[in-house]
Image 1 (cartoon, helix red, strand yellow):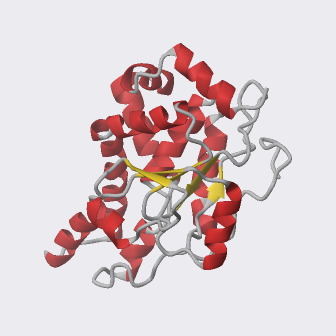
Image 2 (spheres, rainbow, N blue to C red):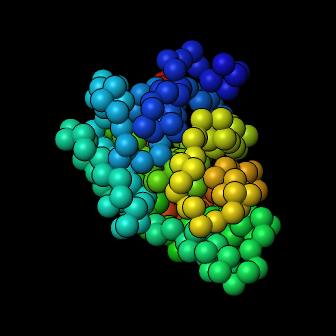
Length: 251
């Protein structure tokens, strides 16, 4: 356990069918408060859970899933836990179609894949801010315990969780550490894109600090800083931010 965390239950749940399922609890805010445990989770999709996974998730009392997957992704992996209300906040995937186009044209490199990943993160901010605002609406409406996810739980979910932790006044270095935990826990589905080369799949199947930095740099370029983006881009006023911190931080 790092100095940035409070005494904890396990952060990573070790689910077989959702390897990247983990808790955002325990992280320290700049004021020394801590994100409450067992309230906000992040994960890859919930469409391949085992019976044991399902029992574990039910034991957490999760009420809502905030799903950033696109339409076809949602069809391919449906959450079957009846107690969980699924709220769709679609951000359609763009990287794999672009990779396939370049691969078919014979001009795909690993550097191309990495730059496409960074550009997708920039576009999350440029084009999908309303989806992130909807996420905060659910958090403000007290739909917790909640799980935030997409397909892999690393890119769209990674940016979403970075914004949530920022709104809770968690320091940037802690936010980055949480983001990079995906590389420790996520098990890529090896047969997901058999038409693409292994080195490209490796590049897009992990997270890198430069990916998240691309989103944060876009926020700074277009809004000045993260606090201004939260206030003006997402429309989270001071009262709402205080309400979030009251709900999701310890006293």
